[in-house]
Length: 254
Image 1 (cartoon, one colour):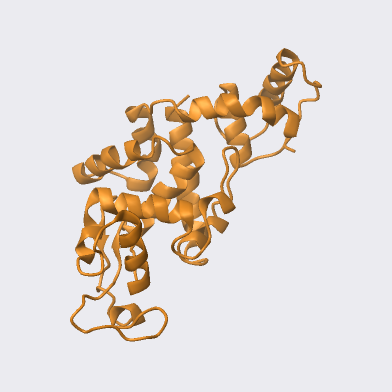
Image 2 (tube, rainbow, N blue to C red):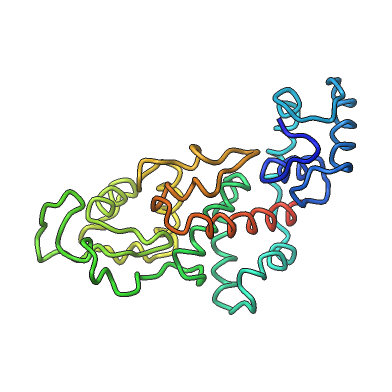
């Protein structure tokens, strides 16, 4: 239940669905719009958004989540994360964002925030700095602790999510029908890197946790969602990035 005084992701989704200015703060204007929607929908007019009001709003929100993104509004709103954009960042975002057209706004925001963090804001698939030096996966050792052939490559971080460990390359390769064990560099190709990131986060490849465990159409625990990738490492920082991406996406789809 959200009402006047509430704030956060659920309020942003509500404001998006109602066509309001999106600021994440449930104030008087938001309450008035909720009451008007409830009146039009034949609901109890109480200005609070519970399950029955959300049931009526969900189709509207789904439709908004499928709207094309206005590039200028999107880039203007994510500028605080990047400062002055490089042409490479712009080009990479113009490739990456359309790939997520079928994802919800909240999912897209967290996927983008993860890519932003894991690629050091370049927004392109990269190799891990240091290539695993000083880390167990930087040796010919599986996550299970067993050694593997020294004739095979080292499975340090590559791509948008910095895929690591023999087992993860093996799993991703089987899912995508690619030989990532012998050719881990394929994880640096844009389409492969994106498939690994999206499918891995949706299906829980990396830690067993999935996007749906933390994020829904109308709400998001961006801090908790870090467990999908890497425990709680930089969880608060990445959550802040996700909020900014989400706000930009919603404003660009208003």
